[in-house]
Length: 195
Image (cartoon, rainbow, N blue to C red):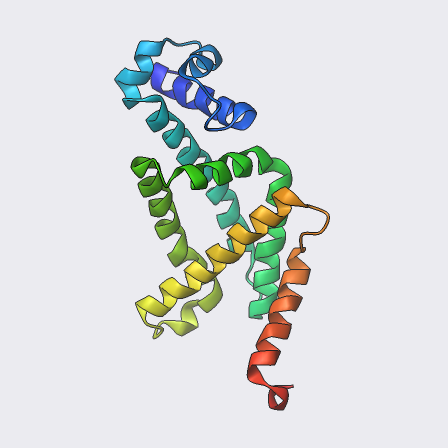
């Protein structure tokens, strides 16, 4: 493993243990068994390195969520959503440090344009897959803007669920509860005639 890879691995350890703002360049060097100069050489700055490590960690987590989405092959949309949300909830047990670092990074993105750009890019890449998961191949005639809105809606729910799971895991809804809540919302929107 070269210096670049060791720096990324060390930065990830620091993100998980110390968080984005409390991690120093010296912390990363100690965790990666490299030197301070290698941070500048490979990434330009500590912030760029931490951002790259965070984005890499989110992408690895995304592979896990893609597996959950592929497993969600039920014909009923609510069943597929329940599968997705249940998989997301399950991932909090194994990826909690990532989500803590991610929420911290979302707040910092206001002041770190490169971080904001990379996180926005990650969201942009996630939207189409989420939209396809919900709309399936039968809805090819759905306009691109509407697909983007579907993906954005699901990302908003995922981010909100993340925050609830981090703050109060016992009170946060399960995948089944979220699917049931959405069923009730749809029923309320459709009105009594749809019942």
